[in-house]
Image (tube, rainbow, N blue to C red; front, side, top):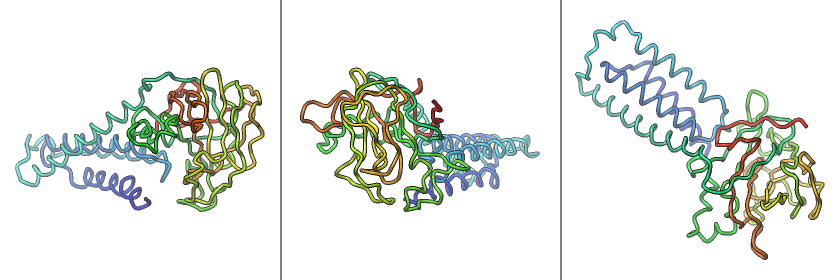
Length: 320
């Protein structure tokens, strides 16, 4: 996983920027295609990749460098004298590579943007569930490209059926100093992650229907694939249930049957259940049928403080 992240989020962008800056095309069409292809690919990468690692603001640095290098390519003194079309085989190869980059970037960038549309289900509006802090969306949106939870909508996969209520879930990482999610690349200690211990508050007024707080917080990347929610709270608000999962052991003060108001304390973010590193999982669903797994109800969309959050979005914690 580390090698893949370094390849796709560091090496590839830097290689494309170096190609644009050090080996500009030798024709007008080539310059246009090179700039468009690298720009489209970098944009798609910015929207599709999960930028918790290495850091959320790195795509903005790549974008700024792309603007500078594109401007430099078009302001070269020899541009007026360049042929319109490549005049050598190497130029045609570079143009073909640019067209491929443009196609891939356009396709995946467009799909990522379509993931910002509301899903074709009822959408539940809730308040911000966080106390103070800054948070980054790791999974969120209305297609599988930006929200891995949506794979559980596939009814043909039997193992997904008990979890289908989570299909439009949102996962949050924390942001610490310099926008880093943790002290280190992937430290084992869950307390090294910015979100670990973050305060969680009731995002809607309702009744606690389930609360478990005794599961252990694992060292990274250990997890519990059986008790997937780990420590969690399920809050029924009207006809919907809001599920907060992977909470911190011993932090949950509520019990089933308790009535809560918006902003009441529910606990803290931890690293319990099927969590490979500390994060908050939150989703909305219809109540599961009697006797069925707790998150097997019909999935609902979720809007937080009026925002349908998508991978890469940031949220500041409430201060009430």
